[in-house]
Structure formats: structure tokens, C-alpha cells
Image (cartoon, rainbow, N blue to C red):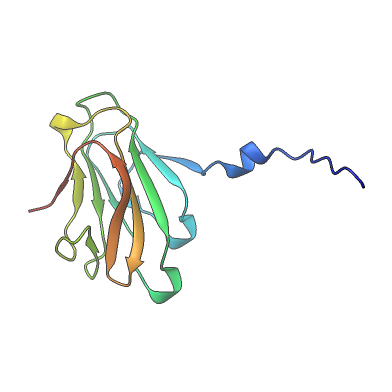
Length: 127
């Protein structure tokens, strides 16, 4: 019987890609699985339109700024809704309740629905 020794660094391969966002902008389907860290106030991040080809994509957004410093707005496409809300309405980590480490993980569950698959902190639906 032979012994197999693995010399790869599986720990590094298992990590999610970390991206720091400093400007308002969009994330793209090919960035699925990434974690976005946001330490700058008043940023709006637009999600890609969900389609049959990109079902299951996931994005994590993390408040990496000081407590009470950041308002982070995650904006779905006009055709998509977050967590059973209204299509095109945002989900917001409100500034007054924001804490370092607050995060939300969104998963494309159907061709029109993002679900919150994990999260910490207060994330409010846009009125």
C-alpha cells in the first residue's frame, strides 16, 4: 500500500477572493464567490441581473469601516428583488446602526429573487 503526501496549500485555495470597494459601482456575475469590503461611506453597489445562466451566484458585502461610519446600499437590477421585497428596491446597512464586520451574503435563488443566505447587522429594505 502506498502513501500519498499532498504538499499544496489547501487553506489558501479555500479562501474567498477579497475585494475592497472604495467607489460606487457594479459587481459582475464572474465575481461570484467574492467578498467585498467597504470602508467608505455612502457607496451604492449594483448587483447583476439574474438569469438562468447565473443562478446560484453569491456575493458577500462587508462593512469594514468604523462603527456608525458607513451607509452601504446594495441595489438589485430593476427586475430582481432582495429577500422577498419589491423588485428594484435596495437593501441598506444603515449608518446609525452600522458596525465594523456587519455583512450580508446574497444568493441568486431564482431568475428574479436574491435571498439573504447569511448576515450580521441591521440591513433595511428600501421603502
